[in-house]
Image (cartoon, rainbow, N blue to C red; front, side):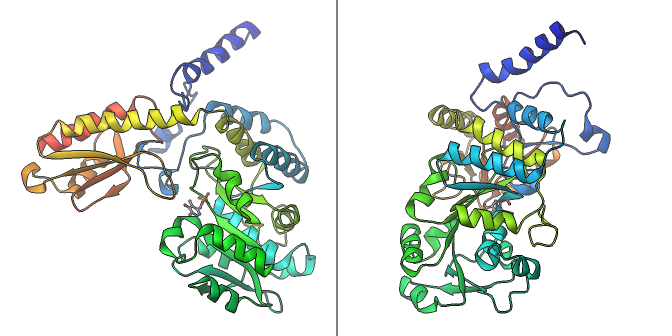
Length: 396
Ligand SMILES: *Cc1c(COP(=O)(O)O)cnc(C)c1O
């Protein structure tokens, strides 16, 4: 291809993203359609950043950074170090490491607190005999992701109050863990827990995987006093689906790295990140912090309003925007209806949206309606979802 033509195509590729909404993904025409070749029917993601729906789409600058990374060999340790320094500077934290999702960040944080940089201990995990091998977490915080912590070979100990934490903490305690999404379910508040860790001299970890926006949260919990914070790379950040970050204290991040790939004999070896994820995460963060949060918010509200208007045009149907308190705290849409009047169950509506063309996935099926997540929609898809929903409700 002539250089002139390549430059022309390249400028064409960036134009739609620049002109449209701030987070427009604006995929260029791909050279092949892998999903067609595989017989997989892609979907419109009106659900959210769910792993089973492949979570998010990477913006062009991220894909281009990965493409660039894919062309040369590098020393992976050097790359983690360099990207860690870039991420730390962008966020304003002491140190950072790219992990295989937030789940791997939880595992590596725990391994760091249990085995540190001790080669013999690192090799022995998840056998924690003779090591600090208990992790305290507030009662109400148990959830599927604590499996990632347990993978390091520790026992979880639940504490209901601050006094319980102080009583249960001892020489076996390796770490205090907090799941921010469960802040409302426990009796110990997020800032109080960080202070407890400081007072007891035990490292604290917060899982804030889905707690962006606001972008300030990347540093907020560390400023609050947490030693380590785990975030997803493949959620609203729209980095590689299998990327994440562990941020925090330099000595603990170094210990996390010692328990991670490329070290073969370590618990982190089974959650490898390659140069593509490491560079892709950095590029995604660089792109994300440049976005205008107010413009993004307005765009998400506009999408809610578009779908709401179509839904509410059907008699007996109501639509309202809501924002979850923690985790994915962005505008969502709840559409409810009188089942008897409309003649359709929410389950049937979800099935029709899924089986129709294009296939549409929603966030949740309620007793009296359906919830939509709009922040992962591509430009124009809000219109499609609105029309399809209206048709499904009308035909019933
Ligand atoms: C999504 C999520 C995780 C896991 O994040 P990955 O990046 O998919 O590994 C962990 N904790 C919470 C609270 C989450 O929402």
